[in-house]
Length: 177
Image (cartoon, rainbow, N blue to C red; front, side):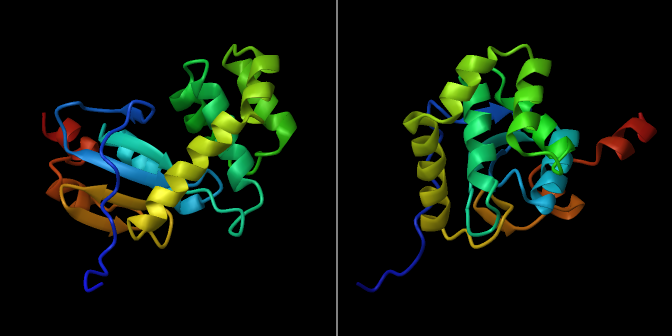
C-alpha cells in the first residue's frame, strides 16, 4: 500500500444538483448549509454563473442542524426545487429550525406534507451521507471544498481562482461592456 493519495471526487451522477453555464468548467462544490463560508462561496459561484455541482458535506459534529438542513434540501429536490431552496437556506442561515424549513417549503409552493416525509426519509439521509463520504474520501477537510479542472480549493473561491477556471468578475464585465 504505497499510494496514499485521496480518491478523486466521483464523476457527475444522475442525482447531482447542477446549475450554471454548461459550457464553463465544472466546479464540484462540497458544502454545508450551516457554514457561513459556504454561503459566501455559494454567492460568488452564483454571481459568476459557474457550472456548479452541489454535493453535501454535512457533518453533525460541526453543527447539529447540518444534516437536517441537507435532508430538507433533498426533500425540496424531490419536488424540483433544490436550487431555490438552497438559495433560501444560504440567504438566511440563522433560521434553519423546522418551522423555518416548512415556511421555505410553503414559500416555494411545495407540498409541505410530502416535503416533511421526504426530509425524514432514508433516501434523503443516504444521499447526504453518500455525498459526505465521497467528500471525505476525496480529501475534503473543510467546507467549502471545491474541485475543478484538477484544482482543489479549500475555502471560499476568490477572483483569481474563478478566473483560472474561466469565470470572470461579472461586475467588471458589465462595466466594460
